Image (cartoon, rainbow, N blue to C red):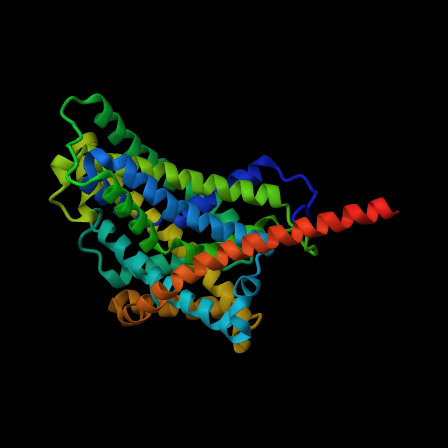
Length: 384
């Protein structure tokens, strides 16, 4: 039943989990595509922001809700594919978002930002330092939600608040900043945001992050889940994500005349430079590095938890699994090997609509079961 878990959860714990959920999903790439989309849709930016909110926020939230109703069980989420399918599909997803794909890419993107501080730093040293930070953050059995929520998120939110807040203030108070009339229709602007959010494939990350968030609230030696607190924390994290997305889309539209000719990664640094001056270069670099590291830590943690539970030789050997993941991450970060991602991305794009349907089906089935159980309990009480 969905009304399990009667213990009171402290507000601070909900807030930490909510901030952690936001930090997990908001990586370096999330600073780029909303800005580019706003720059392209200009005066119709609100329509693209709505489209992005649907597929980039609501869809991943569906995955988190489904994992909550299933008590953090990925096996239950994928049970419709049979025993083998429930192992193979999440494993393929993990390869793409874990040590073979997104995690090393986080390091290389962070390296590009770090070069503003120290352009002579070799990649191998920067990557080694990043791997060291990830190791320190994930080596213990402490819940990763606590680590990200308490230590990484304050720096991340603070830096984002300075960059986005300062740029918004300048955009709304300066007569030099005017949003140009869009060359796209509202419908096309909505479609642009909708498919941009779809292309983030954050629902795949939600299937893994949801497990960590559920187990953060789950009491030891108990199957009872405080559903209200868990769902509230997840909703808080995704609400913060939506607010930042909307702000970034607006900034892209407001500064479109100055940045529309620039590639995506250069838009935010140029906006910050216009609004905050050249000193913002260091702030932007810091923001990107922290964003990359936060996402890398979260993805490494869920990768280790999955692999040590699903691969027999690694069962219960968390430290060994972590070291293997970090070794793979380090090598791929140095070689910039993209073959696996190029091979797997079309496969996972094909499965993504299926995963969306799975999330909805799991939620509906859980609610129906809960409703039937409630009717059964009421009838038994009346009979007694």
